[in-house]
Image (cartoon, rainbow, N blue to C red; front, side, top):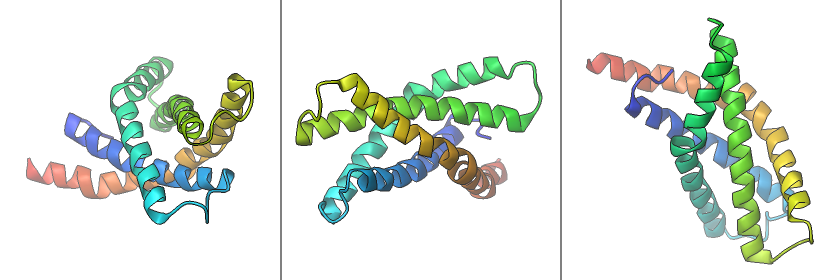
Length: 160
């Protein structure tokens, strides 16, 4: 997939956009926010979440997930296995940190729901992970890889 830093940035932007957009709607649904949040508020929540996600993707979760995935797939040449391993590691890391982000923003807006922050985190992480993994592997990941290969990777190669 991406071979240069610029390609990695484009790939990450497209992937984060798709995942954050869908997960924002999913979390609005889970928290019964539809109908209670303004369009501007929803867009603002999406944009802030997108910025947090792209920073995590580029500087923390992405590099760590790729190192782990490359170590796990060092003895195989199966490209599909490598892609699935990277995607799974990315989803675990992103769901972890974005769940923390979601809890923090929820606490800032609504205060504490319960005495057990750990239980609440595990609940939020579980609900996010169970949707994010299949979303990444079955829907968003393939769409982004197709778009990247069709429009970005091709245009980069034509310029050289």
